[in-house]
Length: 324
Image (cartoon, rainbow, N blue to C red; front, side, top):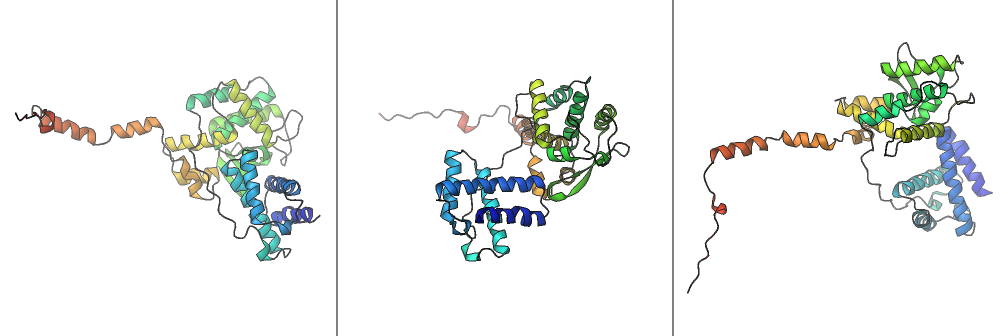
């Protein structure tokens, strides 16, 4: 019972008091349930106050070898377990010296990779893939246009309310991670797609979700992921496409157009500029263009003109002298 009690304290009391979103709390709970099941099977159902750092290390090895979890997933497990035991200590249910995560070794950070993005033709094909003669098709066109045109997250798109989209002022207000709100301007084409959908959808209350499923309820984050993948297949895009890939594409295309990194940070709702700096990558085409602009090209041409007929020493084969 102690496991269930402590997990409930952490998720329902600690996480709720911190103002975490329901989706975050749900993910934390799922992680703890998985660890608790491992302890039940592999550690003789050890109580949470008797867990050691060795148990956690063996759990991570199990995740790596038997469940093929990558370094990112392992780091996430460690972070949640650290937060869990830190909260239990703070609430007075565990002595600090009994905290198995207090001096836990640092896990190797996941190598940061450049984000996958779509090119302009792929985006064009994707946006044109939903049908324009059904309510669902117009809804999905509006969703795709909104995701690419604003860079908002799938969860932000799913939870946006009717009152939070202003098609006159051309803005959308979304609630991001940590409950932080931001207002993002809308492009004319995005406004047009949203207006078409609103017209065929019909009137709804101000506190209702803007995007509705075919059954009349609000759309979930997973449903938006599924729709994006569906239309990516129809558009014959041979890349893994998701709402987050459209977010990457939104930011990358703004970088290509010369938009400042601080502006992109504010549009994406990043709290730290370091999260946005990954989009400061350049394409191979731009790298080649930059190489051609290097002054060494002019320098090499000038040397050739200065010394048109002169043979330098290393150009003349060395004669071999033989001694008889």
